[in-house]
Image 1 (cartoon, rainbow, N blue to C red):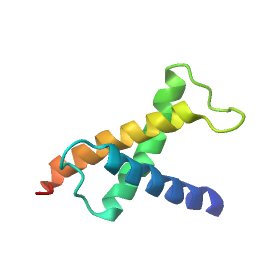
Image 2 (image 1 turned 60 degrees about the horizontal axis):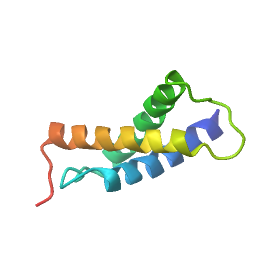
Image 3 (image 1 turned 45 degrees about the horizontal axis):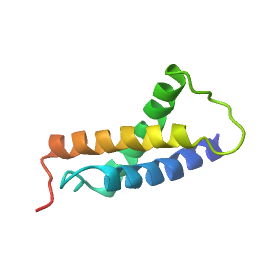
Image 4 (image 1 turned 30 degrees about the horizontal axis):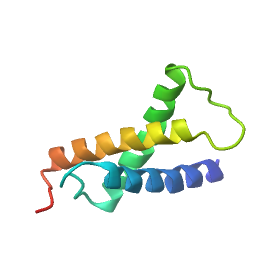
Length: 90
């Protein structure tokens, strides 16, 4: 249980930061805690979307398409969070 929470936090941080880099323009100026939340949500929603569209949840090795889907979803969530908080870089 603890390891699942730890891996979710680590993965959410990585996916959230990658989502900030992918987010277009100046729409990525949000605090780190909100980036991590966007990353965790991106992981969960991205995995759900990937498996719903026909991807396999259990693959051997690294499932690059699933991770790309997670980062794209996190980027969208970062943009939504930036618009909702009104924080944009100059």
